[in-house]
Amino acid sequence: MHQKHSDSNRESENCWWDSFFDTWGPISLTIFLYVGIRHFVAEARYIPSGSMLPGLQINDRLIVEKLSLKKRSPLHGEIVVFNSPYSFDEKLIANRQGKTPSKLKCSFITFPLIAWLPFFSDRACDAYIKRVVAVGGDRLVINARGSIVLNGKSIDEPYVKYFCPRRSELNVCRLVNTTIPKGYVFVLGDNRSNSWDSRFWPGGGFLPEKEIIGKATWRFWPINRLGNPE
Image 1 (cartoon, helix red, strand yellow):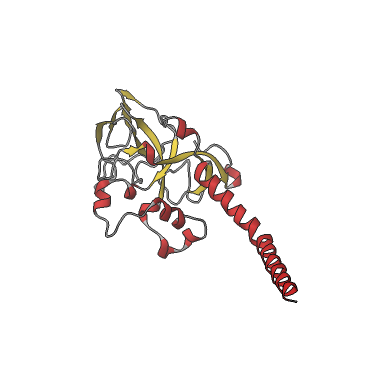
Image 2: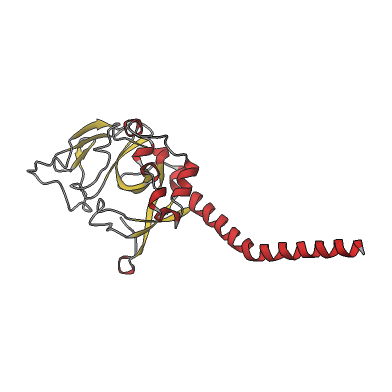
């Protein structure tokens, strides 16, 4: 009698486990695969501001590919997504009230659905999107209009339509005359008159290559502008 009771309990436990796994197993596997792909291969991002106008508009959705820049350095003209300057700029970090969040915490904060909850947000966990205009070893000059001279040559940038006004009391463009250190890049928004980019970061403006998440490779929304974001 005792044996039958034990067998019955064991069968009940097995049924409960099978039911639990049938329900949550596929969901857990889906989340695991999603997190793995998002972390190592590619992820979707949206454009939250007008800093890359007119090519990239607010609420455009992009695929950010992460594999190619693990094998090489960024190239001139590539559009890259990178960790917030609040996570690596020493002067911005020094002005924080609390400790800089870990990568694990940022992964949690930026996870879809959770990212929409404002009380979980942290500027150090944000991601930015800009264009690489200079790489390690380059000599870069940026004039008051936002045009660039790279290694002594003026660069034609057909994707830039909004340069800084020639006469403005707002000082929306900042003069730059510098050499980019090895292992770093200099990034600008295509909307030169309205972009918080390397020109304005207080710690020097150089973006470490290791802080780059990936490169923007494909715009999948809106449908009528589907294609390469560059």
